[in-house]
Length: 151
Image 1 (cartoon, rainbow, N blue to C red):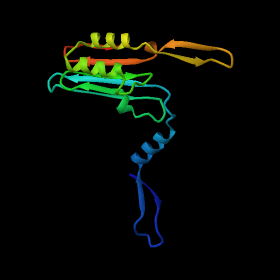
Image 2: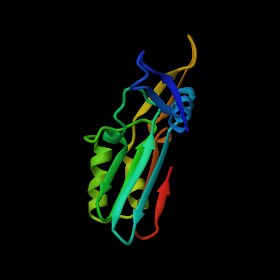
Image 3: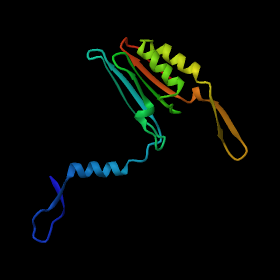
Image 4: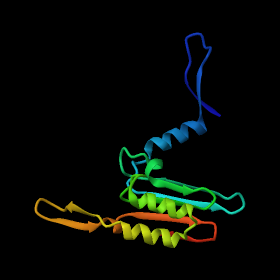
């Protein structure tokens, strides 16, 4: 089944849009802009592959560049919330620990201990709140010993 949208004056070369594709397009155009994040990390013990998927509501951010970290054959880690650059000491320490086979619990503990920054947010014209960045970040990590951690 298809919907005919247009045909030329000779009746040849009509443009057709199949109903299924049209409905998918229509539904996609109605989806609101995302205002949340998610992360999924996974390991496959049979193939020793690691992977993950995620999304962020932080505009103009390369999600892969800042979200996904891995030690192939060992473990996978996603970091969200306040995104960290790959050169940040929190990230470089985590990746080194992952490459050395550290447990997800040990990696997460080290990341939290290194995360000593705070951020101040204006609530209105006269009030603000200061929060520890470690409490705003989101981590998800898995390895091959059926261990997964998150914050």
